[in-house]
Image (cartoon, rainbow, N blue to C red; front, side, top):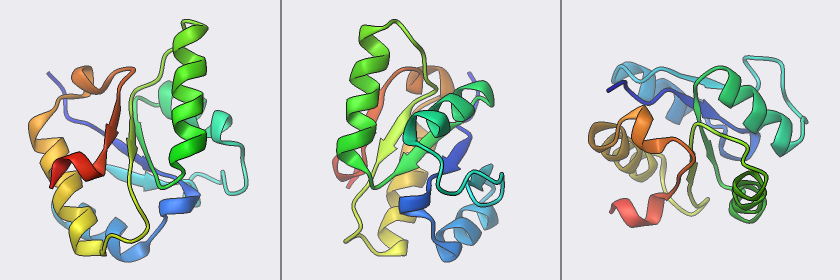
Length: 119
């Protein structure tokens, strides 16, 4: 079982969250760091899949729609974690760490997790 690697999308990008996760040993990168700002959600999900990373976003509607479309077309993704903008950095950190400690990368495969369920 392997550890979840994360890609932080543009909507959820926050340097404090990025730094806090890295300080705790999480392998996380942002779309800004890989030169994918302003790319479509589908392009981001494809990149994440090719690079074995689950995607973390606040863009619930679009990423859940993509998850459904991928499932319908038998396309694969490495997992999607959907959060909410009203969570503090500390709350996001706590919940993301809980997901990473509980689930393996294999268990995230083609799955959607809502940060709200990990309180």
